[in-house]
Length: 236
Image (cartoon, rainbow, N blue to C red; front, side, top):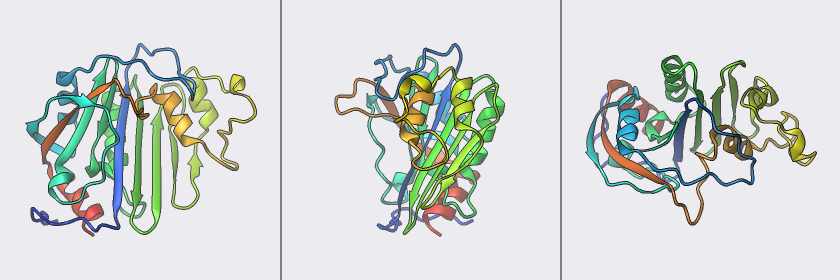
């Protein structure tokens, strides 16, 4: 695909974001849905290396000083689609990259990166998630936990589950029984995927109003795969 010209605006009705979390052993004690993660020091060098490991990135063009963790905004133009954020807290790495967003139709960037990172880090817990709204809202969650088959949750109006969420949590050392009957993690009825992701990632995807954790922000040069993904999903 031909690169999109600088200054090209994203359709204002289109929004989305994508995250990749890699939790390396040794694993900390699991968090419950209402437990807040500790403020572990951020390692900018490890964050930089994690960004450079992405198939969507060929080089880092600019790096900003670390700032407090926040929710990523949805990109408004082509330049903002080259913004990648990453945090490295101890054994946990969290990356936010809009080039990993999928649309639920043909794009496969999130799943491709998930599988690539899974091969690089077979002993790690890997979670990839994206949300996309382009007139229809699409969600995709991919989870790899050693000792159990991979899990996928995806869909537009309703989420379909491939795999066993309870088995995935059990393999991560998380027992749902103490949470009581009010916590539903089944594929019947409401699926609390925010609580599910919070427990699996040790709160890496949760953001608090008085956030004490930090992350780094980068402007990257895109690889061919990254540019193609951006063209396909953000400028169809």
